[in-house]
Image (cartoon, rainbow, N blue to C red; front, side):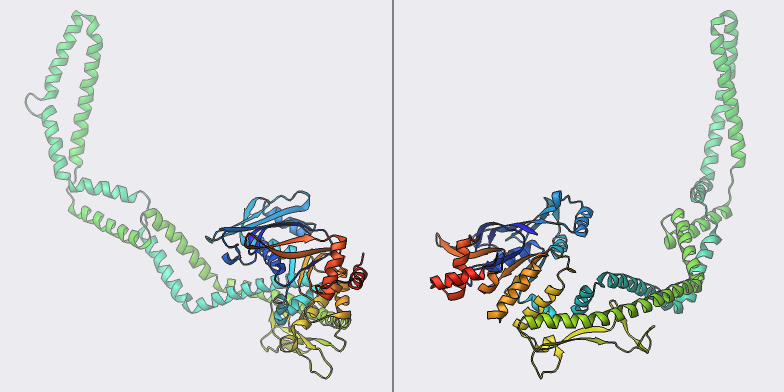
Length: 564
């Protein structure tokens, strides 16, 4: 239930704070006092449309805050999934709109999107005004109403899930079949690409090795000349380093005979001598291996050109080329298994069709039975509401479809996300009139009463805990007004019900009564609301009954209207 509502700088409301209890709550007041503004503010906090025009003149922002007590486990589960704690089942919704266009939505101080606010709002409050009744004119919601009435909503939801899965399988097989014409051509192209890469016999390190070999072949003459010069300096020329070092080593060995302390240096010199010998041998071996091979250089350049061509075509390096090869191979496998994939998906489609055909027929049979009870009970409710000669029919239009996999009453019929058949309520408010769609015949007052009749019958099935009726009394009065009041009071035994009304017969049935009023202060109009005391309530109902002139008779009549 809605426990508290705070409104700041919204339209002509500067600062409003009101607390509510359970039961039927009447909101009354003169035309223009601001009753609809309070509903607009409530609609805003429930995720409705934000408009900068809602902001009070001279202010930069408007804020609406509400406190709800929640008992529905599914709604509490949604909050838990959002990571929002709800101590004692209470949540605080807060929304601020600004003239700059920025909005801020909070649930228990956690920032949320407007979409989340709307999701919660749709589970917390059901607002019905003159414009909301127009939804009844849309035949698409008639199946929702019938399913809610017959408690087949969950069954319908499961059917819809299966139907969506079925459509996804149809999409998959259509996509595969659309590719069939190009499959052979694509398969041949992919095989060519795999063969092209495989034929190159690539390895990750090959490119670096080729670059090193190419560099060696390109500079063979320079390398040979430099090594020859090194050998000349070390050993081949007269007076070369190696010969002179040998003479120095012998001199050092002779000195070690005179002073044993030089033995260490002799050993180091000997080691250096052997190192130079090995260096000379290695350089001579290397110079003999130096190759002047233009044909090999041409082979390397051709191979590198081949690798570069593959890199440009399939990736920036050999690793990416090989990775692309694996990807192409996987696509080839898919194409090679094309027929097998088609067969597997078709088996899945056949299974879906069997289940959907069975479930849709079961759902249709249930709806047909539900419709009879629905018709009888809604007609009775409307009769109580002063529409004694009303007739209601639930029309089922099963569209023939020779390509359908569903057979109902010996004919193939079209299937949709809600089952089979299009449902529409047909209505005749007066004797002698043919049954016609609501959109073509029902007046505003009749729609209001039709909605009230529905809500009276759907009270226990509907999980939404708060209902708001904005001027449900349009076009009625007298005895019927009292009946409407009794209907609202009955609904309020299960839910918290707010009713904006101009009729004293309805206001008298309320468990609490609030008056919306406006006043001028400092040359500014202010709208506010307050709960009426017992005596104030008598006076307000007397005013509603007889206008501004209140007499003892009207007061007595008002007391009689107020029920405990």
